[in-house]
Amino acid sequence: MPIHHSKGTTAVKWVKRIVLGLVVVFAAFYLITRPEDAANAVQGAVDAVFNAAGSVVTFFTSLSS
Image 1 (cartoon, rainbow, N blue to C red):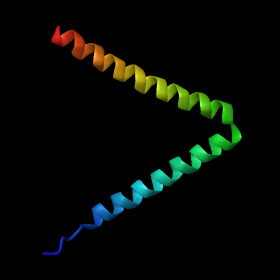
Image 2 (image 1 turned 60 degrees about the vertical axis):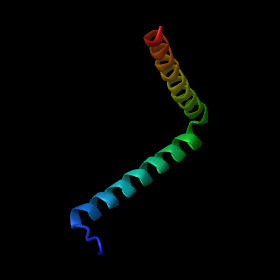
Image 3 (image 1 turned 90 degrees about the vertical axis):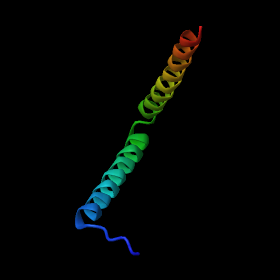
Image 4 (image 1 turned 90 degrees about the horizontal axis):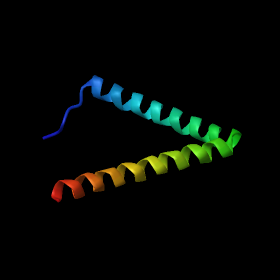
């Protein structure tokens, strides 16, 4: 049986593609025009992920003891 998509679903897909494209273009522009700031932003994001992972590990360690 074929699956029929409504026009709303198609519009959402287009909006997602446009937003993703704009994010990629902005990221490339930021990387080219301000490479040091872009590197600092990426480093900050990586640090935040590692800190969050450490917090989750600490939580489960405390929970299990």
